[in-house]
Length: 552
Image 1: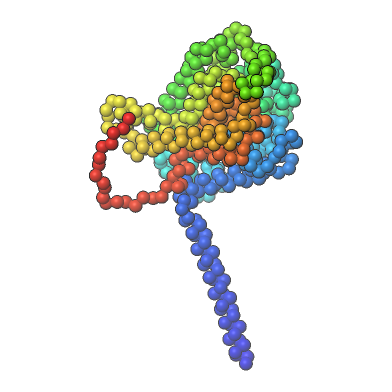
Image 2: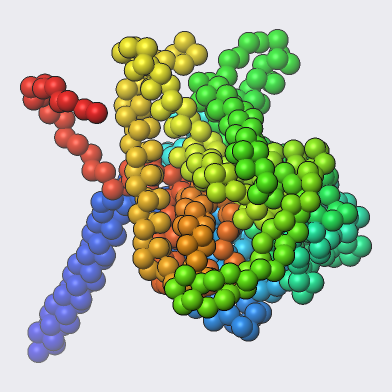
C-alpha cells in the first residue's frame, strides 16, 4: 500500500513537472513568436514599437490630474496623447497653451519627451550602455543605425556618442546665453499683435523663471521641437514694439539649424577637424555634401522667394509693412446679417533690418523648429504655400527634424536633371547614386504627398465646422490655406499653428488621431515607418519580358 501511494505521488509530481515544463515551453514559444512576429521582427518595427509605447505612456502621464491647470479645457487621453505625440515627434503643435495651461510638472514632462524624441529613444539607450562600460549588441547597433545612423554599421556607436555629447553641449551653451537674454530683456504686449497680459509669462528680472525658460527653450530649439513657455504666440513678445531681442532670436536660430544637420554630419565634421590636426586628408561623405548644399540652398532661397511673394502684394504685407487693425462691418453671404471683422491698414515700411530678420528667422523656422517672431497668419496666401512646401521638405535625415528630408529632395532634383540631360544614372560629386536609392527617394516623396493630402482631406471633412469662424467666402479660402499649412506643419514636425488653441481642442477625434499619425510618420520618416510593413521578397531566378508604356 505504501509503495502504491508512493508511486501515485511520484506520478503526480511527474505530471506536475511536465505541465510546468510544457507551460514554460509554451511561454517560450509565445515570446519567440511575438519577437519574430512580422512586422516587429524587423528593425524598423522595433523602432515603431518603442515610439508608440513612449507616446502612449506620455499620453497617460499628461492625463494625470494636476498636470493641466486650465479648468476651462476638457482633458482626456486623446488630447494627452496628441500633446505627447507632438512632444516626442518634436512638432510643437498644441491644444492647450503650454505656459498657462500646464503646471511646472506638465512642462517638465513635455520637455523630457522633446529630448527623448529629438535625440532618439534607442540612441539614449546606447549612450547609457557606453557610459557604464557595457557592450552594445549587434541588434542594438542595427536599430540605432536605422534610427539615427548612416549606411555604415561599424562607426554607428562612435557617431551616436559624438552626436549625443555635441547636442548636450549645444543645449548647455544655449541655456547660458538664453538665461541672460531672458533675464535682461523685457517683453512687449502691444505692436503687430495685441497680447493678453494673462496669457504671457515674462521671465524679465526673475531669476527662477529666466533659468527655467532658458533650459526649456534651449532643449526645445536644439531638438527642433517648437514648444515655448512664453505666450500663445510663440516669441512674438520679443519682436514687437520696443522689444527686438536679437540675442534670443539668433541663439534660437543657431540651435535649430545645428540640430537639424543630422548625426552623420556631426561625425563627419569631427573626423575632418581631427584629420586636419593630424595633417591627414579626409573627405566628407556624399551624405554630408548633399545635405550641406541642399540645406544652405533652401536656407538662402526660402527668404528670397517669400520676400518676392510679399513684395508682389506689398500693400497687404504685414511682414514688410507696419500697420494697424480697424474694425469693419461686412455683410454675411449666408445669413444676410451684418458681422464685425477687422481690416489691416498699412502704415509704411518696417526698418530694413527688422523685416529681413523676420524673414530669415521665420522662413528658416519652417524647416526646423516652428518658433515664430510674427503671427504666422501675417504672411500672405502665396507665402503660406511656399512655407508649406518648405515644411514638407524639412531638414536632414538622422536629425531632430522631420519632413521628407534634404537628401531625399536633393536626389529627386538630381534625378530630374539626369533625365533632362539624357543620363542613364544619377550622379553627384563624382559618385553614382544607386538606382534603388533613387527609386526609394521618389517613393518617399509620393507617399509623403499622399499622406499629407489624405490628412488634409480627413481633418477638413471631420472638423470643418470647428475651423470656420465666419461664413464669408474670403474666410473659407483663408481657412483652407491655413489647414494646408497646419497639416504640413504636422508632417514636417515644425509646429506652426495658424489656428488658435480654442479651435484645435474642438477638433474631432478622427482629426486628432490623423494628425498624431502624420506627426509620427513625419518624425520617424517614410523609410522607417513603411519598411516595417514590407516583407522580404524571395529571390526569383526569372524575369518578365519588358514592354514600353506611354506616359505623360
